[in-house]
Amino acid sequence: MSNIVFQNHDIKAIKLLLKEIGDERYKVALKDEGITQPPIPMHGFYLEYECDTKNINLYYKYPSNVVLFIMSALGFWRVPIENWKMIRK
Image 1 (cartoon, rainbow, N blue to C red):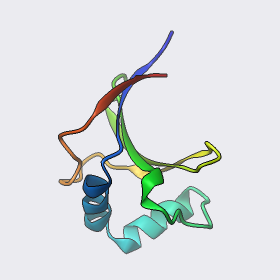
Image 2 (image 1 turned 45 degrees about the vertical axis):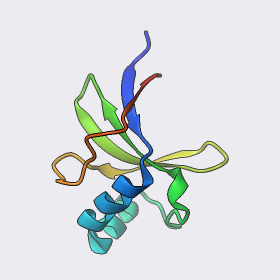
Image 3 (image 1 turned 135 degrees about the vertical axis):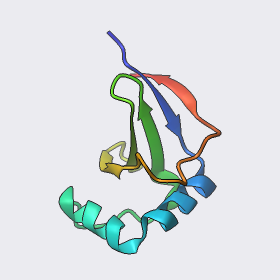
Image 4 (image 1 turned 90 degrees about the horizontal axis):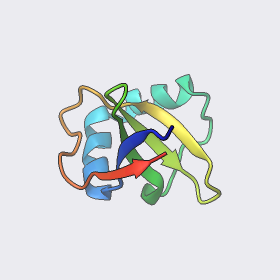
């Protein structure tokens, strides 16, 4: 059975969301996930809405296709409304 999720790779929207999250909260989220080297290029960040759990999560995908969960974005005002694409996992 495939899960349907919606992904958003809009860099401008993700930059605004990261600004709302703030540096301190972002660093704590990285530490909580055991990420010692923070992602640098913006093009790897994306948001994912999971239809079954209704969670909105921030991820980072490295060029090597390694995907890191960073934090939940549920409840932040700057979660984008536009540019979501449906993906089957």
